Image 1 (cartoon, rainbow, N blue to C red):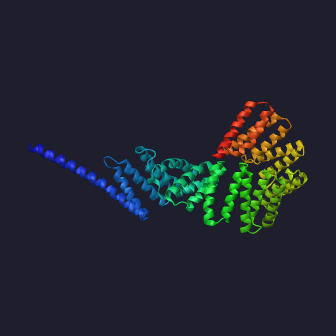
Image 2: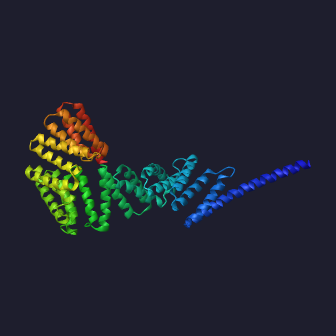
Image 3: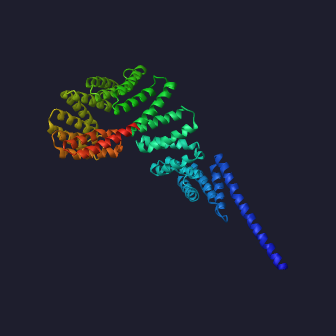
Length: 484
């Protein structure tokens, strides 16, 4: 009996010691973790990393490891490595944390969003945007689930990434990030805060480039209202915004509104800037483009001449911007059937560009295309075809990807064949032009309209009425997208 009692007492003592050891062990990792956090807040990253690694060692070796605790410690270790410039170790630790957290939490848990945000920030600093993008996509979905994720770093990370995609002209990626950033700012900042206004402007530019013109218009108007209060009507920012609004209305063929905003921008710049300022030339060029779209070629010619005169004085005659302006003025001559004047200007531009860029440059291709248009208008289809083909050959020889101008040039050659009744030659060119535009801009962009119009004409000319209906249906979708 005595031996039995002694045995029982010993077992109880062993269990008590084990429980006490486990408690002390658990308490010890928490103590190390708390110490590590304090050191992190004090920016003592070396000692903090040592404390965090001790906490991890203890937490991983308890009898029943707490996976959530281990994930938190790993995340902290990742931050220490990050601040010490050890990006490889930082990524490894945070990736382990993401995997552990993902096994014990739902995908939209704020802890997962936090880790993904940290990992995306490391990729961003390394400029590894191809790695950052998928993480950001997940982060955008998880981060909005709860206010716990709205830390001060989140808007900054979103802004940096959105600006990167905007600058790279990857507007499809930039748009949802700017939208989320704007929502975060609107929840946390006062109305008309500079960060809100700047994000609205960036989002408006992005939507404009995506052809989402109604949304862009509303955002620009909101920004304009704020800037008028803060900056007054006459400021360079207001002038630039008015130009953007004018372009939106121009694309939608609302020429009266477009002209009004364009002239207001020009008036502001004329008043604020010297008559020979390059921004004045830009406004004149925009006004010339509007006159061109409305068939007001004489007015467009005058505005283009004024812009050219400013640029020649400011930049000199041997400058790419001057050469571009010469091309624009030559186009007005062409549209008014002043073909000799137009060819003279194009040849002047061609000589300058060949000397500057070589004979196989895309800008040479552009002039060849313009000359093709002149000969087409003169009825010299053989020379027109030679110049159009030369334009396309230059791009192929230059071994570059199809530029945004390629679909237009294919379309021009297609129209040359169409006007001669060579429908079989025209159709593949129209279809390839449309395909390239869709790949570049998406299926609902307004710039697809001219190509769709030409396809509809071709289908009507060849009696394919069902194909005409299909094209008209696609045009309706684009019109609907423009109004959204």
